[in-house]
Amino acid sequence: MRKRKTQDPFADKIFHILNWTFLIIVMLLILFPLMNVVSSSLSDPWALGSGRVRLLPVGFSLEAYRALFNQRTLMTGFYNTIFYTITGTTLNVIVTVMCAYPLSRDDLPGRKLVMFYFTFTMLFSGGMIPTYLLIHSLGLLNTRWVMILPGAMSIFNMIVARTFFMNSIPKELTEAAEIDGASDFKLIGRVILPLSKPILAVLVLFYAQGHWNAFFAGFIYLTDPSLFNLQVVLRNFITNIAAMLDAGVEAGGIAEAQEIALFQEVVRYAVIVFTSIPIILVYPFAQKYFIRGVMIGSIKG
Image (cartoon, rainbow, N blue to C red; front, side, top):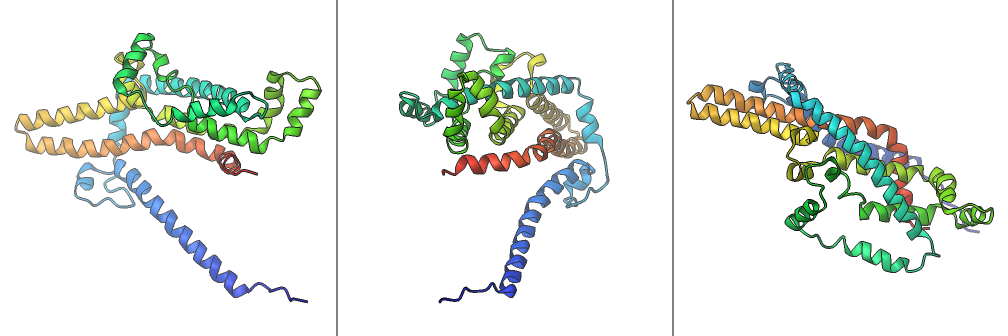
């Protein structure tokens, strides 16, 4: 009879040491740029310009954040972004689930043809000008809905959700519910959705991040400052600083122009930190479901 090999404790110890060393190196590679961005936003502009900022702030200063929060349009942009994110994400998740679940059912006639249609649209785009003309003809231009309706569903997210429904929801469970007389809406609301928290967390995180970071749509389709989202407001703020820099150069104030240029760099780092904090705060609460949803939704069987 063949003897079973025993595990080598020394080999396991070496493996864990190498594994932890690798993970620590990766963590430092990710953590160092993040700390550098935060430290740069809290440093004196002259210290940043001289290249003295590394891991900790040099000449601690909150002037960049004061300049941000002194903008009258900042809170308007913040409110608009929250509205676009909550409303848009809610609509995105509803539409994605309503599309993904029927396509995961074997008894849906022509589902392969429908999936081919959806997948085909991922290969081509109408382009910016035709899209602009379409949005104008639909009456969405310079309205809040232009930030929500055109991207009501992501085909990629729909495919991930469909894969999750196919591989993670037992067919016997849905069949038993149907035998008990559950309608399609009751089946989705009382059976499917309670078992789909992982993939719902993934969809919420993906869609919310997209709405929060949306810039191009607001920049192209919105002209009313009261409708601008946060990204457009912050872009305009940085542009105003650049205009001040150009005015300083034309006036011959080299020292003043240099000071404005350095301050502009600090403000850019502050903008990155300010716009990233909400998503960073949300992620830990959704991390457990996020990992489960991605792994389960991407593996068949």
